[in-house]
Length: 277
Image (tube, rainbow, N blue to C red):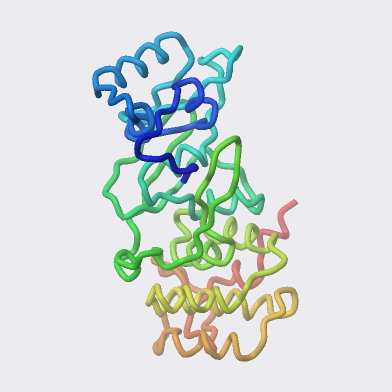
């Protein structure tokens, strides 16, 4: 994630902390040992001393944040996207948090979902809640976890985040992780452009007919604004359910949209939430 260090290169702690707003213990240990071969005990001692002095915040086991000079550690706002990225080697910001990172979320949350192959527990730091999502089985063993993951220079570090194309599919695949249909619809409607070929490719990898139908429905309802062509819809129709399915697990009644074999609640089709002042 960060610039790589040579195997024998030793980095001064102050230099490391200055370039790593959030970091893992093992990442610091690798740079701190270097040619000098400092022991694990010495490395742990440095982290403990810096934390005690207020120069570092201990977020959870093995994870730290640097406190800028002159800042009160009790009020320092740790960047949630850098935290999520550092929770596992392959972790990346996703779902509603992905929308929020890109500035396309209708509502602001303090809950951050991140995807990883690792089994992790959710944890809370101050007002921020970090929720792990185990990568779906259909893409878990792919080297790129299905693609659509990019790195952004952010807040002095690097954040790994799902692209808007992957996020479109993911929030429709699991709307409960993104606030439900109104929040999903309102957020996605803030986005002016998608690479639709990338959307279709990732939808195909997920292997869910229901998700393909949801993606197709959303794009069908926004054909003009998103420049959706017939071949895009045709590709998704081949992946969609062959028998009628409810739009979500609550089996909410609605109208059958035959093109996608989905029973869609009237409030979604009519976007009735827009009628509320």
